[in-house]
Length: 219
Image 1 (cartoon, helix red, strand yellow):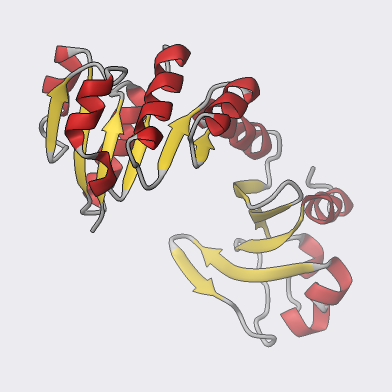
Image 2 (cartoon, helix red, strand yellow):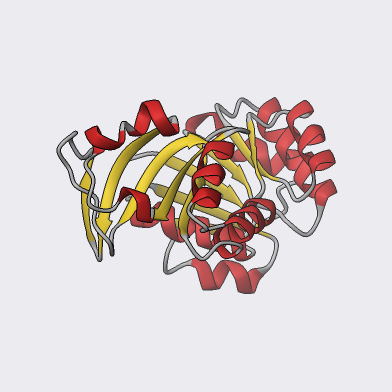
């Protein structure tokens, strides 16, 4: 269990606070808006109405005692920047700040953020990839070039085993799992025979996955 200081209770902040509590972490939430704070009391450990750009307030929190500080302010970049800097100046161990634009991310990282998150951009990227193809069911970006995809089993794979297809050598992909309905078979062995109605979790270069889908008329 970790202790988390979360500043900003907009939609992103509330969602993150709820998930952190589901994961059994302690969450102290801060927001200037009294209504937002009152609405968050049911799903955080504690909450305060305060201005996080106040140095005296940040000092009073003892931010070095938290495992992580999250700056989830999304509607006021100046406040987000000031809060990020103050947290680091007063000894925060790890600061995660929300960014909505690339230029914001650069300033946040230069002013103390250890990492940044782009909820709008990341959701947009996922939606563009997921819904631009009828045969991509899920998608997790791991690096600029590599991702994990859940795809419909290609027709040319059906009725053949992992070994027969030589998936890694021929397609340059790693099969991480096979799903049928809600049942997941992780890391299928070389004797697994692919079937229609299954989906496959593959790890590989984005271009290799797209090439596989194109060859099977599944772009």
